[in-house]
Length: 431
Image 1 (cartoon, rainbow, N blue to C red):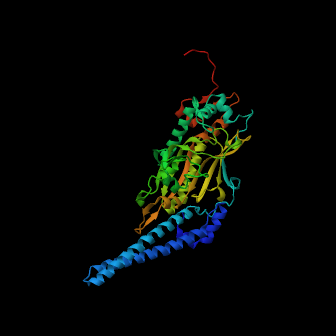
Image 2: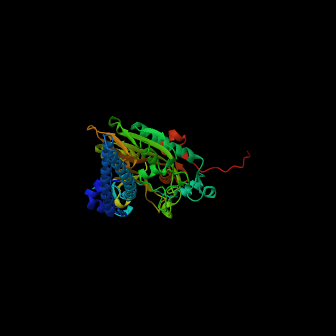
Image 3: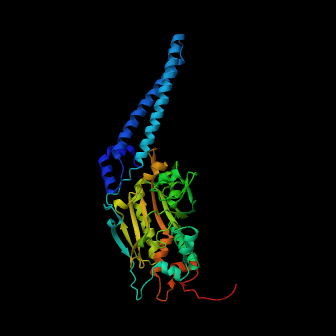
């Protein structure tokens, strides 16, 4: 969340930022509550001072009537303090609720816009393949090659779940190992993270754990949720800690399942593996000094580019517009891969990387001790190394052949053990 004093001192800029992000939040209310809380805290401190003075006076040599008077005053002050503490607690709860609605400030260079079509393309990498046959989409390929079973998954788990089968299982593991090795080269510490996190950690990262607008699965009665990304668990790893400045930046990568409701997501652009309720993802997460976060954000994007360049999948990089940033992000870049089966051939998002500055760190209370001896909030950054399901979409569609087979990218062959996925031969052999 933003610092309340910052909101007060930059009120018009904060309100303009809320409008540019196409969000609803009441910055005026935050300032009003902040000023009330400040006044109440001052009043409480004055009462505490009176209590201490009363207690000190009680230690002196006193006449009986003087002692009785001080005792009565002490009782009265104690009652006033208890009442004021209740008021402070209530106003702080209201302030936090209102403050959490305020999004992070956007980078001054982030394009202003309301929807993803307002994102600004900044580069393209690779050459879009021109097919001499009618390309299939990944759903057709997955079914014809017996790689994906959506029908059985719908029967067992519901819509937007899937079974991976046969070579697709090895392909998923190959994508993970390929990406892990690249991140290891770049000095990331690897994790396999929990698939469950406490609600307060989700709120700290910027996810809404409950309600109609929530995109996560809450576990009833547990105060926990299934994670939508390892950003949640890696971001919570150092919550309520002070990190040694000499250790920064901390570069982590987390492998996890991701669970998302994807409520309301339907249609051509959401078919098959592109938008599902469960998928595997390898996430990058960095705890950084504030002065280094812009540079590290660039490095995270370049790592994502390295991964998809190595797979020889055409992609473009877009600077995400203010209305598509998400509340915690200061700036976000998306990588969109070319998907031949998407509406006759279109770009589809496969990764993103965000600099969230100290927005999440304030909520999670993650700090470092600076050279001046003061504790300051770290900057937090995240980036998708590989979202396996969407990468699988781009891979299958770009590497398909006229005979219905799929060539495996050379970078993955060493991990999966085969270089082509061919149509299955029908046999009548008995077990």
